[in-house]
Image (cartoon, rainbow, N blue to C red; front, side):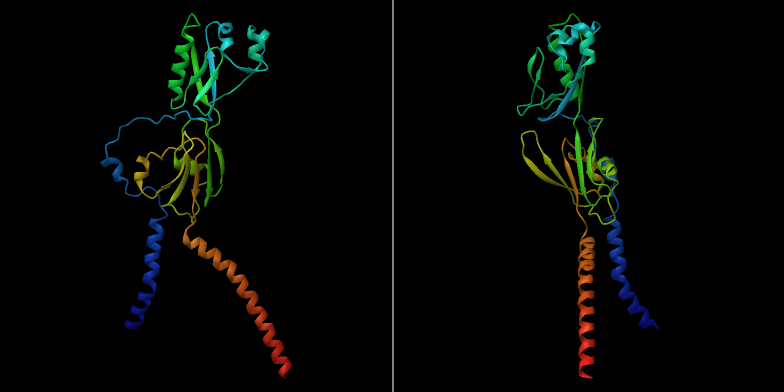
Length: 265
C-alpha cells in the first residue's frame, strides 16, 4: 500500500507543479510591494502630440464675431467668414499634424505642435492670438483620432477609440474583453511607431506589478498590442488538428483490414 501511494505521488507531483506554475503565469501585478518601495515622481501622465494626429481646436471670445477668422469650418467662404451665423452653421474641421510636426492655422500660419501636450498647444495658440484680439481668448485643443488596437488571445480583439487622451495597457485589454485563459501574460508584445517613424516591438510582463512604472504603461496613438497564445494552446490546437487526421487514418486502416480478412476467408 505504501509503495502504491509513493508511486501515485510521483505521478501526481508533475501535475501539481504544472498547476502552480500555470497559476503564477495567469495572474496580473504580482510583487506589488515594488510600487511602495520605489520613489515615484507623482506626475500625472500627459499625451504628447505626434505627426498624423488630428486636432480639434476651438477658439471662443466674448465677441463671437472676432473669433470667426480663426476657425476653419467646412463650407466656410469669404462671405461666411464675416458672418457669425454662417460660421456657426458650418462643421468644424480638424487640423492634421504634418510630418514636420506642424499645423496650418488660419491667419497664424504654420505652428510647430509636435511634442507638446494639449495644454501646451492651447497656451501656444492663445499667445499667438493675443496680438490679433483685444482679449485673451479661450482655446481648447483635443485629439480626435486617438486609437489603439488589441489582437491575439483576447475575447474581443479590435481597434478602440480613446476619448480622454490617455489609456494604459490594462484599460486597453479591458476594452478587448480581457485576455483568455490561454494568453501568455508574461510576454505581451507592443508594436509602437515613434514621432519620426521608427518602429519597435516592446515586450511587457503583465504578471509583475513593476509594469505600472514602465514608460510603456500608457499607450500612444496607433499602438498595437499583441497577446501571444501559450504553448499549451498551440499544442492543444496541433493535437486537435492531428487527432482528426489520425482518426481518419485509423478508420481507413480498419476498413482495409476488414476487407483483407473477408478476402482471405
